[in-house]
Image (spheres, rainbow, N blue to C red):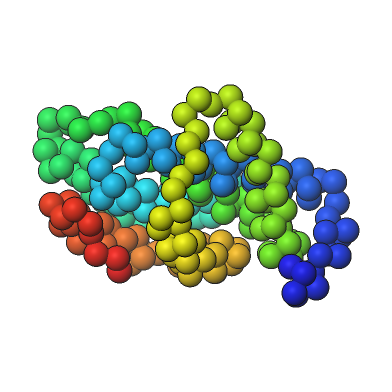
Length: 218
C-alpha cells in the first residue's frame, strides 16, 4: 500500500465500509482458517482438500439468495452431481453405507466452503479499492485471532523450518485470487453447467490421489 500510495484511500472508507471490512475479517481469515485447520486435524489432507475445493459450487448456491442470481435446471442438476461426488469422496466410495471416516471433519470442511463463499459474495458489494479493502480486512481480523489465541491453550509457536516455502506458496497462489473480487460475469460463468461439471470431473481425478501420501499439485 505504501509503495502504491494507497494508504490515504483509507480516509474514503465510511463507517459502514469499515464495519463491513470488520465483518469480512471475522469470516476470513479468522473463522475460515480456524475451522479449516480443525478439519485438517481430523481428516486426511487429501480428502479435506478435495471437499474444501467444492467452494465454487457453494458460491453458486448462495449467490441465489444473496445476489439474486438465477440458475436453470441443468445447473441445478450439475450441483447435485457435484455434491454426490463429495459424498463419494467422503465415504471413500462406499456411498450406500454412508459411513464416513470422520463425519465431524467432513462437517468442518463443508462449513469452510460456506464461510469462504459468504466472504466472496459479501465482498462483491464493496466498491472501494480492492488492495486497501484487503488490508483492512486482514487488519480487523488480527484482534479476533489474538483473542482466540489468548483463550486457547493449544497455541504453539511453529518452527521456522519450511515457513518461507509456505509464505511463497501463499503469495503466488492465493494473493492474486484474493485481491480480485467476484464480478457478476464471473458468477455467471460459475453457474454454467459446463463449469460445474468441469469441477466435478476435477474432483474425480483428484480423488485418485487418495492412495498417495502427497497428491500432485495441479
